[in-house]
Length: 117
Image 1 (cartoon, helix red, strand yellow):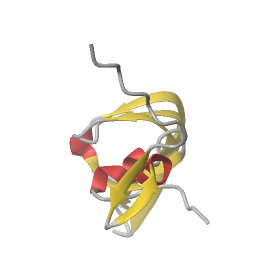
Image 2 (cartoon, helix red, strand yellow):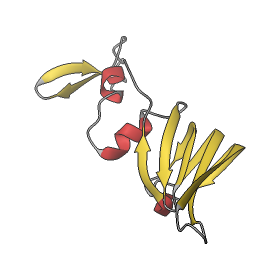
Image 3 (cartoon, rainbow, N blue to C red):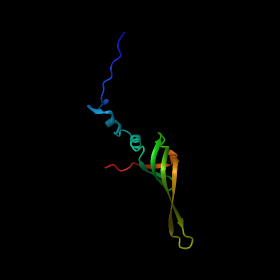
Image 4 (cartoon, one colour):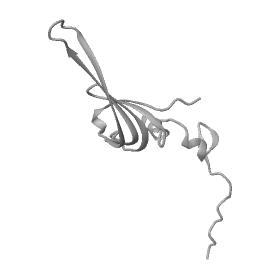
């Protein structure tokens, strides 16, 4: 009976653009838009939503629709009101802290990953 092949030890190696790279290196490349989101898992991200809402929080999970679960969230809601007498715009911002938040992907207009230096 044929013997099972032994697996080589050491880091797994993949081919990319004609050169070898480790799987760890492969995991940090951005080939499609959702890769940028994947690399931001367990890090604080900035998310802009419809309706003049912004949130910052730690990204715990996401899916292909950009539904997200964020933790330790700070939500900022900006509203513009018109003064009845002077007709001036009055811009108000309201902030709230939320421990965990589910964000529906169709409300997302922008996701900014953390700055990496």
